[in-house]
Image 1: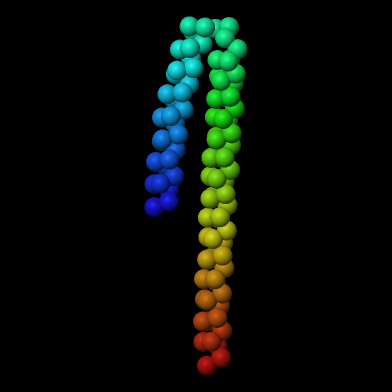
Image 2: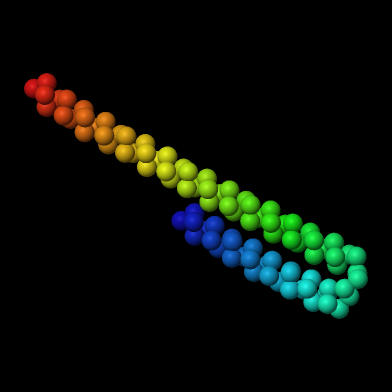
Length: 91
């Protein structure tokens, strides 16, 4: 469920960023030497790169967490199997 919410938020972000960058591109074409528009354009690029890094970090964290959970569950299953075998030998 959380992945669906994250995907929806990502979609909102991409839609908003597409709107903003489209407007800034249009403004830069109209006034290519405007320093405020140049600053805004640079700021949008930096925000985009920051969000990409955050999304990448979150993806890596989820992958690592999933791998650790898999390894833990595998170890618990092996322990259970060994315990059952040990109990069979004790009888």
